[in-house]
Length: 164
Image 1 (cartoon, rainbow, N blue to C red):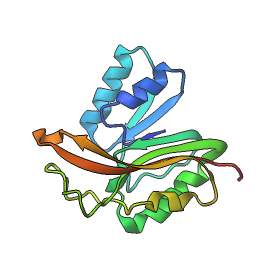
Image 2: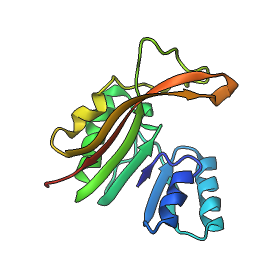
Image 3: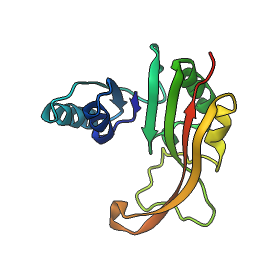
């Protein structure tokens, strides 16, 4: 499951590498681009439009992936949404997530959206105290989105569900 697939670059990559991919995004244009990219790559992706704050999983997945989207989940909804994600992950399954985190020494991105809510440093790791953490890191990287040089801080995690 690619949560917030954008224009489908990652979803198509996974499908080209043999994964059965389901993906969603808020943007209808993103869903249409994902569909087009999948067709051009000759792969199948079950892609649909949904809001990350309203959509809940109802079937189990082996891998949940999201990069640069989870900051659209308000703090108050994170516990319930992450409980849903964990509940609908198969034993042995992985969550591979990257979230933007707040840093007092990094200015807001020039193209930051008002609906974005950065995470606290290390916050995402707290949702996986009962899973095996395969990888976790905090990184600062340079970016040129919006045409203006700036930086972002992210937490990245790969967590494995070891028991039901």
